Length: 100
Image (cartoon, rainbow, N blue to C red; front, top):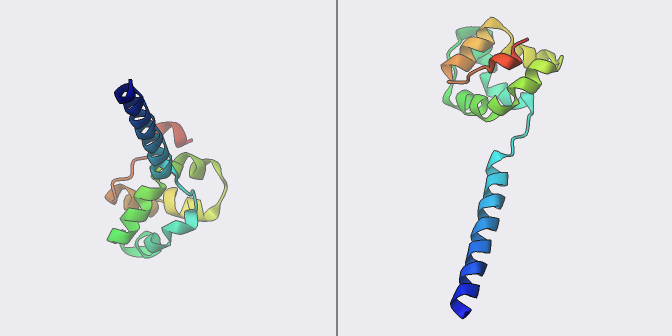
Protein backbone atom coordinates (compact mmCIF):
# COMPACT_ATOMS: atom_id res chain seq x y z
CA UNK A 1 0.00 0.00 0.00
CA UNK A 2 2.78 2.45 0.91
CA UNK A 3 4.64 1.70 -2.30
CA UNK A 4 1.61 2.42 -4.51
CA UNK A 5 0.90 5.71 -2.69
CA UNK A 6 4.53 6.74 -3.20
CA UNK A 7 4.26 5.83 -6.88
CA UNK A 8 1.11 7.94 -7.25
CA UNK A 9 2.79 10.92 -5.59
CA UNK A 10 5.87 10.51 -7.77
CA UNK A 11 3.71 10.26 -10.89
CA UNK A 12 1.75 13.40 -9.94
CA UNK A 13 4.99 15.30 -9.35
CA UNK A 14 6.27 14.20 -12.74
CA UNK A 15 3.08 15.33 -14.48
CA UNK A 16 3.19 18.72 -12.75
CA UNK A 17 6.85 19.16 -13.67
CA UNK A 18 6.18 18.28 -17.32
CA UNK A 19 3.18 20.59 -17.59
CA UNK A 20 4.99 23.46 -15.87
CA UNK A 21 8.09 22.93 -18.01
CA UNK A 22 6.03 22.88 -21.22
CA UNK A 23 4.38 26.16 -20.31
CA UNK A 24 7.70 27.79 -19.59
CA UNK A 25 9.35 26.72 -22.83
CA UNK A 26 6.41 27.50 -25.09
CA UNK A 27 5.85 31.04 -23.86
CA UNK A 28 6.97 33.62 -26.41
CA UNK A 29 6.79 37.36 -26.07
CA UNK A 30 5.65 38.64 -29.45
CA UNK A 31 7.68 41.82 -29.46
CA UNK A 32 8.80 42.81 -32.94
CA UNK A 33 11.44 45.15 -31.50
CA UNK A 34 13.27 41.98 -30.34
CA UNK A 35 14.38 41.66 -33.98
CA UNK A 36 16.61 44.75 -33.82
CA UNK A 37 19.78 42.61 -34.26
CA UNK A 38 18.46 41.91 -37.79
CA UNK A 39 18.13 45.55 -38.84
CA UNK A 40 21.49 45.81 -40.63
CA UNK A 41 20.90 42.59 -42.56
CA UNK A 42 17.42 43.64 -43.66
CA UNK A 43 18.58 47.14 -44.63
CA UNK A 44 21.58 46.06 -46.61
CA UNK A 45 23.63 42.92 -46.82
CA UNK A 46 20.86 40.36 -46.35
CA UNK A 47 23.34 38.21 -44.41
CA UNK A 48 22.03 37.71 -40.88
CA UNK A 49 24.23 37.43 -37.81
CA UNK A 50 23.91 34.48 -35.45
CA UNK A 51 22.15 36.74 -32.94
CA UNK A 52 19.69 37.82 -35.62
CA UNK A 53 18.84 34.22 -36.45
CA UNK A 54 18.33 33.36 -32.79
CA UNK A 55 15.86 36.24 -32.48
CA UNK A 56 14.12 35.35 -35.76
CA UNK A 57 13.62 31.76 -34.59
CA UNK A 58 12.35 32.97 -31.20
CA UNK A 59 9.78 35.16 -32.92
CA UNK A 60 8.70 32.53 -35.49
CA UNK A 61 5.58 31.54 -33.47
CA UNK A 62 4.47 35.19 -33.75
CA UNK A 63 4.49 35.36 -37.56
CA UNK A 64 0.71 35.19 -38.03
CA UNK A 65 0.27 37.99 -35.52
CA UNK A 66 2.87 40.09 -37.32
CA UNK A 67 1.13 39.55 -40.65
CA UNK A 68 -2.24 40.61 -39.20
CA UNK A 69 -1.12 43.81 -37.51
CA UNK A 70 -0.39 47.00 -39.39
CA UNK A 71 2.90 47.72 -37.66
CA UNK A 72 5.55 49.26 -39.93
CA UNK A 73 8.31 47.56 -37.94
CA UNK A 74 6.73 44.14 -38.43
CA UNK A 75 6.35 44.85 -42.13
CA UNK A 76 10.01 45.88 -42.32
CA UNK A 77 11.20 42.57 -40.89
CA UNK A 78 8.73 40.15 -42.44
CA UNK A 79 6.97 41.68 -45.44
CA UNK A 80 9.85 43.38 -47.22
CA UNK A 81 11.70 41.29 -49.83
CA UNK A 82 15.01 41.60 -47.99
CA UNK A 83 13.32 40.82 -44.68
CA UNK A 84 12.01 37.58 -46.15
CA UNK A 85 15.51 36.74 -47.43
CA UNK A 86 16.95 37.23 -43.95
CA UNK A 87 14.20 35.11 -42.40
CA UNK A 88 14.78 32.36 -44.99
CA UNK A 89 18.54 32.46 -44.33
CA UNK A 90 17.75 31.88 -40.65
CA UNK A 91 15.50 28.93 -41.45
CA UNK A 92 12.26 30.72 -40.55
CA UNK A 93 9.33 29.43 -42.56
CA UNK A 94 6.23 31.43 -43.34
CA UNK A 95 2.98 29.52 -42.82
CA UNK A 96 0.95 29.91 -46.02
CA UNK A 97 -2.25 30.55 -44.05
CA UNK A 98 -0.66 33.73 -42.63
CA UNK A 99 0.51 35.31 -45.86
CA UNK A 100 -2.66 37.14 -46.95
